Image 1 (cartoon, rainbow, N blue to C red):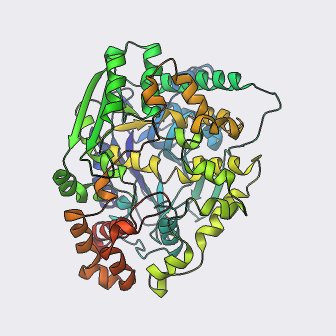
Image 2: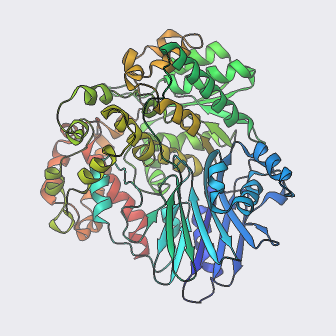
Image 3: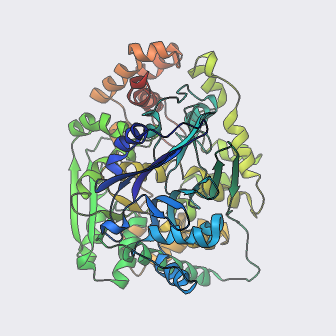
Length: 594
């Protein structure tokens, strides 16, 4: 796990080391162990390393193969790299490290751009092929690892985070109306290639880009998820068995493919608790490090799930670490968490993950997390509501998911930013994509391949990597996801959702953990906005910077400030927090460079 960046010049100018250094400075938390650059005239790469596999200096990046003129920077983990390494040795390749980085390098030399088909893992990487004078950018199938780029007539730059690109000159920092509309409709999800900034795009999941020095740009999607039934019939019991086998394989590979200890973020929910149970089936649980975080309660909601995580710890006797964060610390650390966001993120648990990761990073470099289970196995409350709803696919989805209709968006922002109903167009296209048997199949596929990428998965990556901590998400192992997508959606909805996971868990977890109401990573102070948190948001939204930006309609802002707890989204998020978060992010990441 690392931070990567680079530049290819189109104007015959040499890459300046200062450009790479500016990006690498921002990326430093992602790779605290070492840093290095590669520059060859009009192309340059930068790398910040978090050493997880092959901790030796030989495995440092940028990694080069001088014989073939190929240079690589890579962020992520390839879980099948030992087997791929054996295959490549049989094909005549010689290795100088035991790293997964070198396996990608040799895979490219052997198979060219088609190497991505052989990789099983989470990855974002860039390869410079000197013989072809070609830059290749690639991202894993589910978009677990981020990759941003900025393309102008003079250069193409890329980086693991958006703020790293903003640290360089020549980037258009104006707000992107398409990204803005998505941000406020899909609770901060801005599907690729867009971001909220006009001058920065992101590589879509399962996609590679090819650039050459003549400004030629090609793009290819190398994997798609089919959500249709297999030709062979499987009973419910057989589907559960298949899930158990695939999930066990994913959990084991996500733990064993590392040269450092691997812990688990134990929230107390079914998903993270099941990870502990499955690991305990294969490994001594007393050696497993687990971590939980909680916040202050409010009258409407508890601020922790310790009562459930403690039961899992008691059952398996893990080496547990529990952290409680008081509200005064949450508020004082809020600006730090916003600074760590590559894109503005309104999910309450972004702050929770940031503060938890700080503590966890003192004990381990790698953790497993339960993100993806709800999307893959239909665990959220809105899936049955959508399933039962009437109307067009867009109507069935939007009424239970969109944060605000387009009419309210137009009431919220000033005329210069109102634009078209971009989100409705995007969602309609995604729901209409081929190879989905039912409406719910299309919803779950869209969630897994698009919405989750820029919501919980991005939050976990950003907030853990802010402390040099690698988060692995076995529920998003692409082989498990493919199997689950072929499962009848009605089966997933049984037992209030996630039927296969709950069935597996019956022999591994207390019933109280399995049958409890669906919980979330609670940060009540950012949902029920009051007291000093309300004053923090008021200060941001009435600041001179906010007024001069001219983004929000003053009347709308005042309405939310007067009654913040009255205005909630369909998914029970604070609309006031949405506005304050974006303004805070813009002040930190955009205003400072103007």
